[in-house]
Length: 261
View (tube, helix red, strand yellow):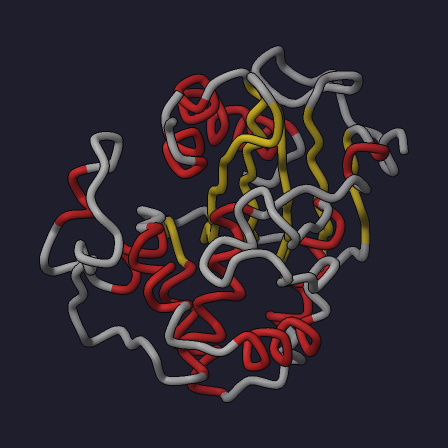
């Protein structure tokens, strides 16, 4: 029998007026949602509000709070290089080649979603440590009763797109009870793209929640001339392959339609 982790990787009305969305973006009535909160104008834009309020497993978007906790507990840093413990997590055929590199940096582990590294790191923490941080973070339902190294993978931990936004705002407001060094270090890790028009901070996440049903996330923030815009997108797809192909494109098309990118 194939493992759950094999399955993981293998196979409101609008609150403001939004113009008709392009076919490639998330639209009203589709099995997707986009939530955007613009800090400076204090405005929300929500596509498919009911879904925006529905909680899902965070999958790899949990690497945002997880990295913060690991940095704060001094379990990882940006100067070291890391390698997956293949004795603890035996390589699978579906693993990307990058997961087997022997010189993985923390930022690459974050953006390449090197699951076995994060699982090993999480095992160096105690559940009381994790729970204390998630309570301070007010992160989703804060339920880590699932497996120590997998409670964020279609297990006990759940949160909605709106809750993703709330957490990202608390992160930027530095109200998570963390050190200044942790906030500064994570900011550089979180940054995905920077150009003359904007800075994009983003994290993907994907996994199965039912037969032929994958949920895909894209969450983060955009800093542009108008200020800071926090976003959280999720959608369904029947396979992992299809999700990876369209998830980021659909999310970014929606952000462009909303004049964020």
